[in-house]
Amino acid sequence: MSIVTVIPGIEGELDLDTGCINWQGSKFGNGYGRKWLDGKTVLVHRLVLESKIAGFLDSGHFACHTCDNPGCINPEHLVAGSAAENTGQMMGRNRKTPRRKSISGIGKLSIAQLREIQTKYLAGTIKNHLAKEYGVDHDTITKILKANIPHNFTTVSPNFLGEIQDNGCILFQGSKDGQGYGRYFKNGKSKSVTRAILALQLGYELPTSMDACHTCDRPSCINPEHLWAGTRTQNLLDASKKGRTQGKSHPLSNAKLDWEKVREIRQKLAAGERMKDVAEQYSVGRKTIHDIKYHVTWKVEGEEVPVPRMGGSLDRKLTFAQALEIRERIQAGESLAKIAPDFGVCKSVISDIKNNITYKGV
Ligand SMILES: [Zn+2]
Ligand SMILES: [Zn+2]
Image (cartoon, rainbow, N blue to C red; front, side, top):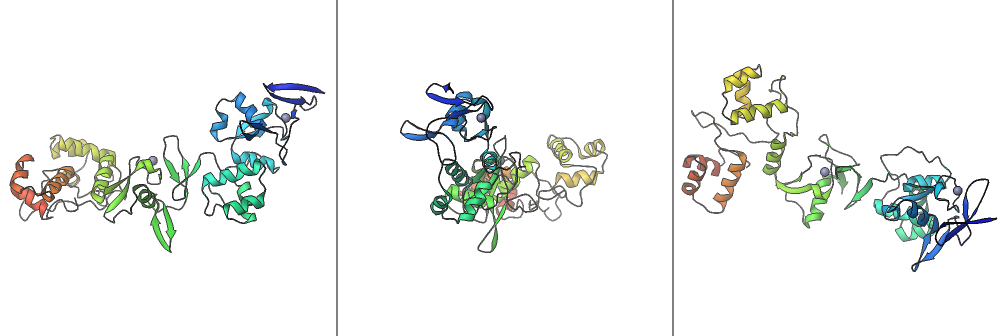
């Protein structure tokens, strides 16, 4: 019998056949070694793994046995793994179970709670107690213990399942609409996931005139920090700035062009290049460039295009952002005569904005 010290204060008996170092102290019912430390019971093999992998205990990962011997505390037989890998191993299943994108039996529970249940079970809490504590039935607990919860899955309040990406986005794992926005059912109605999350963040329901906008430009992202409440127009401005559109290209648009080219064209026109020259550069007709310039084609869905005045030529003198500012100033009570010179336009332009003749919806 040879007793070896694994880390100071933690010893076990070395099994020369298997190389396992068996903990000789007290154990949980499931065979894991336990130790009283700093006023609480800890799993010995987890302490051992922390000595091998600094920060492991805080990582939320499980200490898994490659030797399938729960009482073993040989650091060489321990690896950090996901809860599911460990649970799978405990239940004698193949540890390399492919990760699933959905989790059965999730019910009303958050991912954090599912992980808690798995952890508590591993720490010795029996299924009946877990069922009572979490208000679910025994079968659900069994399902949860078998559930494969990828380590990068999380729940975003009020309980939407998401997968954390390297860039911080959390992609919704439930059903989505055609544009990739998450949808869920509440009282028989299909609702927007992002609006629900934002409402919780803000503490009030977004009015229908407001959108839940993404700073990250990923419709399925549900990271509350990537969401902001914007007016519909701000959302469209944002979309147009980023070149994102909710639909595909306009049916009238020329197939030779794509959004990247269209943005380039608009930049060139804004910089003063002539429509004729730009048309030549892109081998398209002048009408095509004209329509792009005035957002007749390649417009963001729902975008309001200024309607030309009778007999007048259509020329947008102001950007949407400027129109928005003008509207705000009008609402704040400034006179049209005072606003117009600030934007280098005549009073009628401001008046048209005020009367929703142009820049509708801004
Ligand atoms: Zn071992
Ligand atoms: Zn995001």
